Amino acid sequence: MAHADAWHICVQAEPFEVGQELNALQQATPQAGAIVNFIGLVRDQFSPSEASNAGADNPDTGKGSLEAMQIEHYPGMTEKALNAIAQQAAARWPLLGLRLIHRIGRLEAQAPIVLVATSSLHRQAAFEACAFIMDYLKTDAPFWKKEIGPQGEHWVEARATDEQAKQQWKHAQ
Image 1: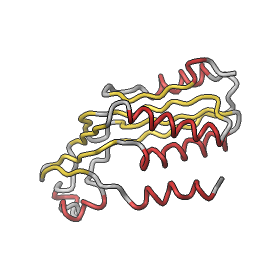
Image 2: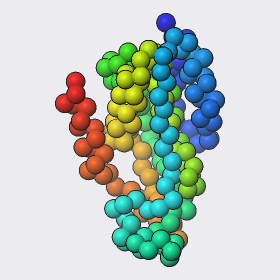
Image 3: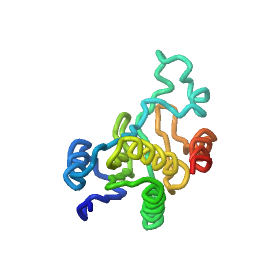
Image 4: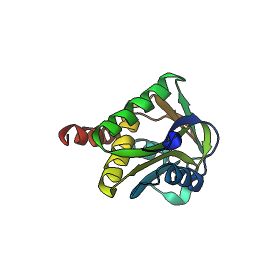
């Protein structure tokens, strides 16, 4: 049985240390045979749907560069959604533990936004659960992202590809 601190889900403004989080997960789940993680970063460019409007076709102009991203959430509701996603993953795969950390506030380009780390006895369950959590996080968690660059600001819209990625799991049950 995993230690009590094997399951960690939070929304925070502060940066997280990936190595510390993975070490904590490893220590909390000593019987694990696999730990898989995903780290999402603030891209140094506008999202693809906005790239043509931002002049990103020519990387030499710098017009497509992103200065920062402002991430907002609905306190209470967001944590509830993250817990529900994690519970769905735990119901599908034999997870021993997980770390799910999502940052909010103003994040500079290349700053870590999200960490998803899963531990299981075997790698396949850890890989699939990690991918599942990320795919559902992109569509089902109430976060709003505003991209900020030299030419202004805009809210990032939902992408059809994120919804398609989530749909793959509905057929894989």
